[in-house]
Length: 490
Image (cartoon, rainbow, N blue to C red):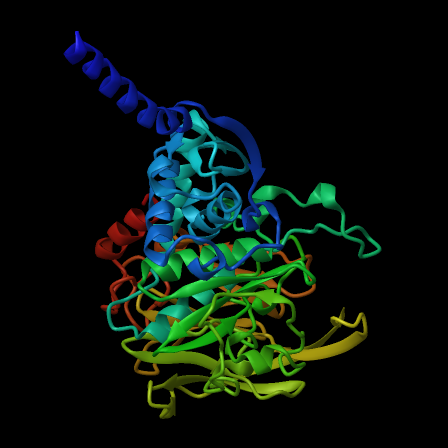
């Protein structure tokens, strides 16, 4: 009997010791939260790091990895009970995961979670803005857009050239939508969430600053280049910081997109005033617009001024990196310009590829308010000459001409155009596109099949046009058509 009573006593003691943890783990409370997401237009975000929360850096990384994997798998519930995450930190942690991973464009800022009596999170219950077949279709658009952008990169490019190429690619295609009324007042109803996401860029290239920023950081991340977002709540604005050769720099693609706010993409037309600039440059009016109030990551101070006065500062057309060299149009800042196609080595040596082109430039002016609500008027000159690289040659649109230039400097006339060009690019399927100034931004496409049909069997000097000679063998024949057809139907 005594032995039986002893066993019962031991059993009860063990049960009593287990009750608190069983109670804590078995009963949870439910709550809701709202993450501050750039992709939903919220610029009041934190640059989260382990020093700001009670988790160690290693623990924070593990939690973020678990949340990311769960979101990518579209889980209805992500178990976090093993990570001891304080419920006061879950909003910021979730926001950091989504803001750092633009491929989570389908996740909503609203979420639920359950927590234990010690206020550690048991599970995250995310909400998804896009689900099912719609998400599958959106993911295909996102992935194909990413691959199209990465196709601009070649193995011989340095990290700087990769960053410049993706900068110019986004600025060449992106269009900042009109979200203001005729009096210049911001209209919230016109500011859709999709404009703030990287998905918005890959869908139809229509994005506001957050979309530029998230697309750029995502693409550079895939290229192995460290790139962070910077968000300014007082400016309602976002831009990037990226690391090149061990140093951090600022890049603001929104302000470098010279066709911002006209509801139409202007291919190949952009500024480079805000590419790889120091914090001091961004905090001054050197780049036209002051930047202030930005939240960024620890250790991302951009103290280097290496590129504050870079060669690209006055270039208003796309810059191409080919065979390790930079190719760009060098226009002096005057009303009448003689544009030269330059070839520049990475060490800074420059040569002229061919004789220049007579063009013209226009002066644009605008105004903005700084952090003290003081208005500043700025001007910049835009040379009306554009550059595109396609099929192993350069195309230059200037005045009323479109010419091709081979890398050895040989120049061919492609076609006359009716007035000054404001944009030049390609449609991703082998055809050139160009815009004309003062014609409601009219867009024209040069169909290679039509050029092929009118120049087939032509040789140099005999009804020859360089445009449909895809393989550059001096003869226009079936070999060229096969490549034209393949590009058109890819």
